[in-house]
Length: 371
Image (cartoon, rainbow, N blue to C red; front, side, top):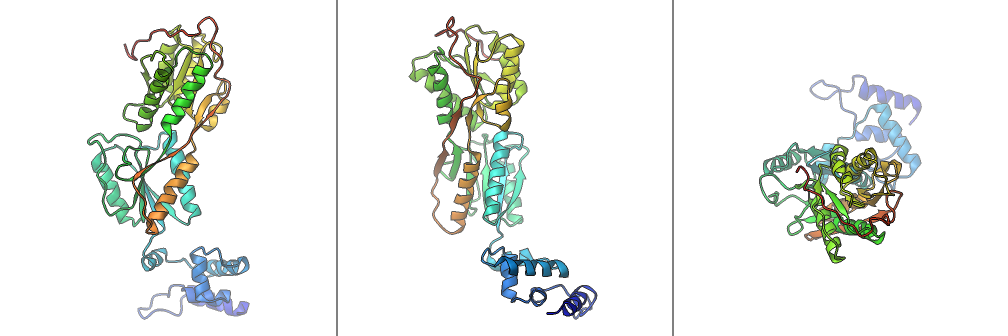
């Protein structure tokens, strides 16, 4: 088709004629794009659907024709014809925690590489009614499957009652008896952190735990205590925070007042940052006087003063496994219930060191937080 013909066609479909029977301007069609690009309608369809088999020169001609004619693929019509919407719904209880945000980012990246979009529904409160309402909204928005990031216990029930017809993968939960769950191996990470501190000669390890309603915090706390007991060490009463640096600071002031405290395992890096500040303000040097280990390995952990020893979570792998399980379900493959655990690794930096010789083996006593 010559440039003159192309210009004429562009004017025809965009400039007022020909028109449909009702007199309205005709919508640009796939056939119009095919004529301008000099390809078949099937090739235009393949380009619209992101088919990687289309050679780059042909793809560029089709995309240029779409732009010139103002063509917009009707994704809803294509979805109805195919019987799928190429969209994964994600329900999350909170966007304030590092784990949730990084898991969501990983899911979105993996879904995009597979040709899927992500529709997000954040919940303002972890209740059964909110979960049920989120599934209803996602059903109206026409998603193919759902990933539920459920890192906390529901306030009004022990476990969620999810629609039986929906393809669901759950992140960070105890629902492995009913759904496929993907999670970081929280207990392995906590055990590794505690053993690292004990191997440095510390008599015991104090713990700043996360919120009681958090599945991850609970698993880390259980593993901390088990690691101490398996070495025959005294278990100090745990302190508790809310994942924030502010709560870590408050707990850190209490820890700084305990002369027998030489090692602390903190349930996340943000609270560890608050602990470091409190110890510094009270003249307790890290790691010369007190060693500190965090959990998450956030990007800023290496820039703490001192750089933080922490447990690295592979959020990218969690997202990959979630999307992989969803896609297998969509292909009709059997995805059994149970929990897939993603291993962690300890990243040793400068916030941990050998126990001071004058306190080696000491334990000390701390009162429960708030007393």
